Image (tube, rainbow, N blue to C red; front, side, top):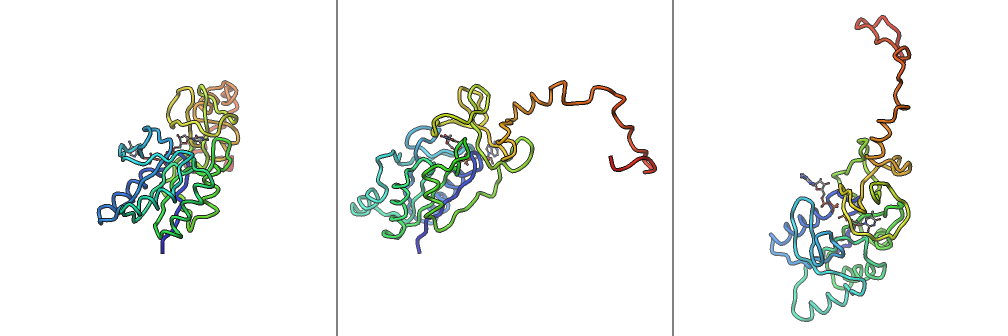
Amino acid sequence: MAELAFFSGTMDCGKSTLALQIQHNRSARGLQGLIFTRNDRAGEGRLSSRLGLVTEAVEADEDFDFHAHLVHYLTAGGRADYVIADEAQFLSPVQVDQLARVVDDLGIDVFAFGITTDFRTRLFPGSQRLIELADRVEVLQVEALCWCGARATHNARTVGGRMVVEGAQVVVGDVGRQGAVGYEVLCRRHHRRRLTAAAARAGTLSPDVLPVDGADIPAPAPANGSGPRGR
Ligand SMILES: Nc1ncnc2c1ncn2[C@@H]1O[C@H](COP(=O)(O)OP(=O)(O)O)[C@@H](O)[C@H]1O
Ligand SMILES: Cc1cn([C@H]2C[C@H](O)[C@@H](COP(=O)(O)O)O2)c(=O)[nH]c1=O
């Protein structure tokens, strides 16, 4: 039976790479898929991974009707064994409903990929609808990491290098960029404190953070273990 699967996670956790791998493995076995995306960083009509792979895709803008497109494509003699929809967080709830109809009425597998929450930790409307409708929701296994080493669960936006929590929900951008707008993945604890890697480094360099008086530093315990413990 056909299914609607939603592969979700933070930015930079390998969603587009997985989309390209699914496409590769299926087409290697003679299956034919249609690939859709919206607002990929590589430009219109492209699905790209940071690993360097890129493929052509149909740009699904806000007026795009997935179900009507598939019906038209099949009626014209096209074949579609599966559908891939990347950057699915940008889809409207109505478009996600259309993807569910593609699964249920046309019997075609749909694999959707997207970030779950925005820079304010709020669900994107498209992701919310996918969580509501999907037959399965998969969190990607290669976890992105916060600068502290914990699993990154949230996406931060920076403007001029500083983390912000206000602004438009959609601003196309990338991690590791220090331009006008950038993104960084963080654990919840550091997202809540607005502590990006740059802000944390600034904190570590602060003269108040480390003890400066050598007399306050306890002597190390002797190797034979007879000294004070439990400090
Ligand atoms: N130079 C590299 N070497 C190995 N892996 C890399 C390299 N650059 C990126 N990656 C991997 O690619 C992942 C990002 O893949 P991508 O599909 O672009 O992410 P997403 O679509 O989730 O934003 C990174 O988390 C990392 O695992
Ligand atoms: C958090 C957040 C992200 N975006 C944008 C930034 C990127 O263009 C995409 C995510 O792409 P990726 O392949 O998953 O890295 O979404 C946004 O518009 N608003 C946000 O809050």
